[in-house]
Length: 277
Image 1 (cartoon, rainbow, N blue to C red):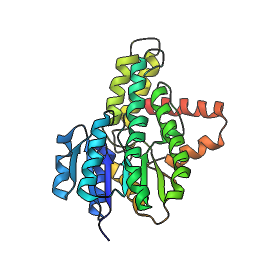
Image 2: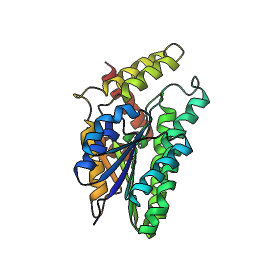
Image 3: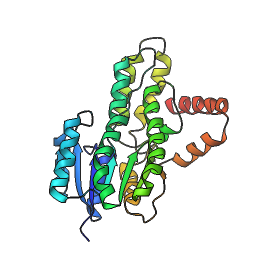
Image 4: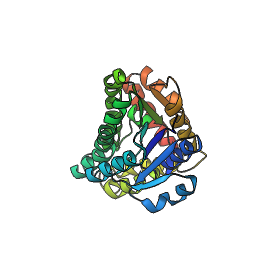
């Protein structure tokens, strides 16, 4: 059987970068896409094909999928990893920023999925692996737009799983806890820029400290660990529908199911204050 073919979006750093590497090391022909093509140069020596990809640009998405099909004639796995976190109070953030968050985290994911489905349906098999977050199961102050997108990814993936089952296509959700990437520092900077000087300043300082702390290995999970869950979802004969992964991921999601909203609100507030110091 020919090597399975995988597309990984948002592969310039972190989870996407490590997932592309691990899939390639385990027998996949991998196409890695991101806007920052130069950041993907280290992937090339491992045989990974690097292509420019902007998931807010339809022509860019169509171009990548067409290039893979022209080369390989098939796509077996799509890892929808491209995404970012924009934090700030709902009152102070421009609606355009909320739309941008949805464009990348939800509509880009949905459009990439649309583009690969015809070839997967024709083959009668395939895997759609959506990188969500435990942030699609719980919430934090000043993260309204980010959490809204991740809750949307969860619902989209669940409905899509039933929709595609008759066609032999599996849909899996990866739910990482805080991960050691540049994501947290960038989100913290954006939070302070939008809400660090107004009526939400005290909350913003605490949340920025929490977000920045995710870059420390002592408190977060290495992206290689999350990539391991992606590999499992891509290769398991009967993949799980969800893969909570990282420190505290299972505990946090379990508590969210068990605790009443007001009790959970209090727990989130206490934990965030403790982390912020």
